[in-house]
Length: 386
Image (cartoon, rainbow, N blue to C red; front, side, top):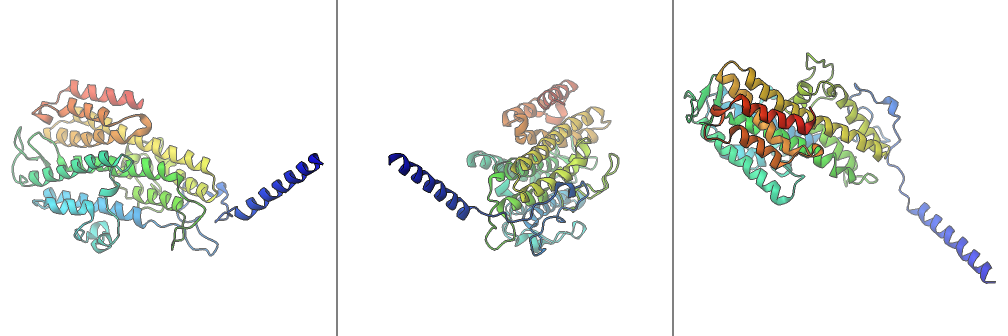
């Protein structure tokens, strides 16, 4: 009798578990995508539609931040382009999207009103993979550099020399010979793009919900995270379409441009990785999603490190103070950005040690030597196995 009841209870339990699992299992939202349809020239949005044929891709957040970066960079350029004294408050407001700071820039197809009302900003995603305290340090440091940019812009009519800010050729530098506009731009490539795309959206962001749509939207949060990453890298439907090693085929800026310039083996594969990863999200194939995310992150970090090395090399090959100052300004910004190359084990201590070794002396750029450049280059090449 006892044995019969045990068998009966076991059967009932099995039936109950099976019934519950059938009742609570959530069906896939999308029809699976055949990976053979994904190519290196497939426009990003082409495959990602719902059952009604409506797109599930929304680039607004990513593209808005990309254009904010463009707009800020354009404003910085006004110090040389228009011999303009820059307003520190305007730079800070553009960074935080506060006080309607953006204006139309027709040459870049930027509509200021669209950015002012976009609901996104650059500041809150800068260094956002870090703790709140550490991120606040990085954000405050960048805003302090805005102050330096405002100050150096007052010297746009002077000739630069050691301890004297002004122009070296067409480049505006501070008293240590540092081109502050390049420090801001290249620092944001790391702290904003590399960190938010790689260390947040394509790392922590991969655990996001993928079975339910975001309320009022036509995408899941995981789909949106991936789309935002692409939208922060490029405005192009096909990233680097028709590019060759000699000619960049699309109008790219910032990280998207330096991936092409400094990672020749990988740039032709980046678009495919983004589209295949997005298809894997549709297919609920998290293993493939992580594979493509790791590729994108790895090759982006490699481009940053290679760019740092490249500009150190350009300092050595430069034939004028202006050329050398421009090279080291870009190089220093990329070296700062190395701290966000987490897959390679770089951090703030690694980055700061190189920066101090290069320009930690009172003369900064003016005190640079081949030995200092070589030591920095060796440290980077060793860490990144370049």
